[in-house]
Structures are given as C-alpha cells and as structure tokens.
Amino acid sequence: MCMVRHISILISGRVQGVFFRASTKNKADELGIKGFVKNLGDGSVYIEAEGNQDQLITFESWCRKGPPRAQVIQTDITEGLMKFFPDFVIQ
Image (cartoon, rainbow, N blue to C red):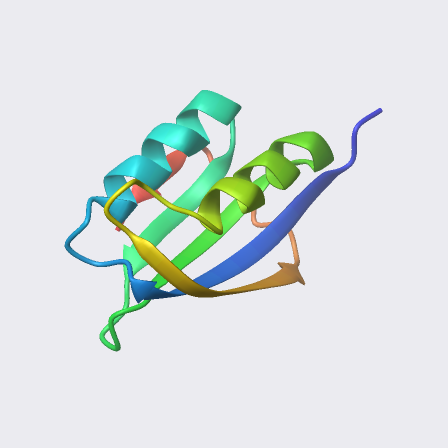
C-alpha cells in the first residue's frame, strides 16, 4: 500500500507573472495530486500538496524548475499533517 503524504512547498525567485500557478495546477492534475497553490505578497509561491511518494517526488522535482519562464532560486519543502484536500486549486 502506498503511503499518502502532505508537503508544503515555498518557492522563491521569478515565480509570479510567469504562469507558475496555472502550470502547477496542470502538473498536479496530471499527477493526481491534491492541494492548492497561491502567490504570496513577498513574490514567492506557496503550495500544499498531498499524494503518494512517487507522485510527490515527481511533483517536487518539477517545482524545483517550474514552467519555462520561471527562474526558481530556492525551494523549501516541509512535511505536514494530512488535510485530505478534495482536488487541486489555485487560490
């Protein structure tokens, strides 16, 4: 049985105004990940994601690069408690 995990991801760099949130939703939907993505006031992007180990490894790797126009400088990933999101949304 695959263990489901919850992670929080804080991404900084040139990550707003480059379709990061829309691209993140597309990737999450493609992988079957649940959660949300939102812009923060400091110019970073914040994501909470839930999925199995394989899904999240692939998602984390994608987040470290982002969409083509993004320039990811730093990606901080932390484990968290499950929230059982019903889907993945842009906030």
